[in-house]
Image (cartoon, rainbow over all chains, first blue to last red; front, top):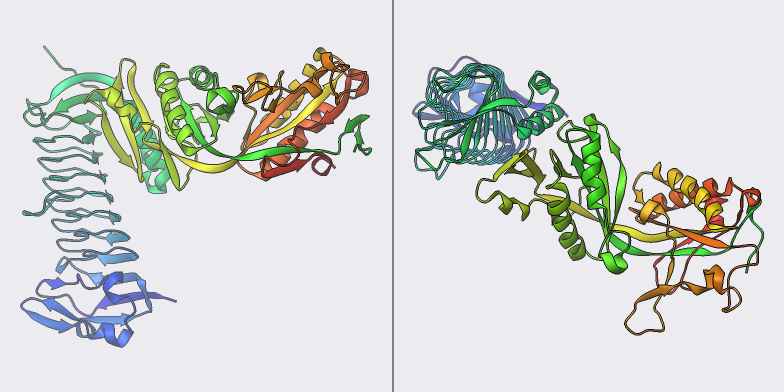
Length: 277
Length: 302
């Protein structure tokens, strides 16, 4: 059996909602039936067969080729299987995802992994704002699952996040981990302003010293954090691509906060920082 | 009853060891150094020789290399056996709290998967007095309890699996000194078998028991038919030359691992032979009515 492959015939002019192209929705459908699925394109609805050259059988293994940032809603509410996007993807990838794997071989837009509750998302590129956040009206952001971004992320990574792990190999924007209820965010390059703003619980691991640390975070000093040993070892065992964690030890500067909120969260900075006068 | 099977001149009785179903779990204790992991492991396996009065049987299974442990530090795996999941739950949780958490630099993780689980850090977390932190990594929940040495990390639960307890054999020797020398070697040999433990001190029982007693308040009492001092007084199982009997009790995760352990142990003890005071190998049973599992010595060592 071969992967169910959607090759975009030409770059779309308007946003194209591909949220129906998930293993869940396509399960049990024939190729002819799949070609007739109507997708929202701008203000109209167009059959998938008109936009994509479609081949393959495996609805559990979907590939979208020649993708651009106009394709939105990849893997919406999916519960199993895998979707691979070759090219960029637009906003709302993996929104409310409940299981399975999404791989983006390109950049992704805003609200990626928003309110996801399980599964794995890998973005081999940069990602926009509100990664793993919760849409206005949602009770919280990401509630479980695992996100890995090889490039940079925008602002408000993990806003109101509740559980799960987000790993950003590059930089993160401002307000990283803002209003977090719990969970873990790891940023391996620089983070912007006000990391952890309003966080209640949760862990933000920053490999480099951020631009500023809010006054409502208090230093707990340079320590060996036993938890980091466990976290890094588990991540290394989870996947080969996390082998780079081998260079990090348990030493970190711990800041507790946000004390203007519940104050049970922490910033762990994997660099020695001098504090005090 | 006895037909001749001899290994290196040592008679192997035509009898069987009788064993029962038990519940088992395994935990992994890590620490800054192996020495401190041992301190915690020795403490947690203390007073856990027999379910008769300890509620649980426990022993160190083996040392773990840093690459084998969840946090990359040296560790030790400890196995626990009890008659019910409930007994296991109370005993393991209490022991982790008092023995592992109190040992400097330790952490405690699950060492086995199972459909049923028992708590490890689930209730211990309250020691954190509100400063405890829950972390889920790869589907496992860990508790980070701030303590004076730094941070005590304890997985929330560990798995429970069906297991077998009470696999055994008896070493009938000229004197206790002869018996101990052989039994020590036998226990060493059993240690190399994965999935089994010998819970008694040093792996050897000096006072093997039978079920019941003449006293109504006692559930187990001395096995007089194997007591050398009572040879003339009771219907003894011992012949003139035998002056001491030692028992090795083996708990294991399945029948196969217990068979392998009995075989390894018996063969190691037989190497001593009659010239070094080892005359016979037998096994403890209750006529086959009590335990579900029968380990026939001659079949195992053949």
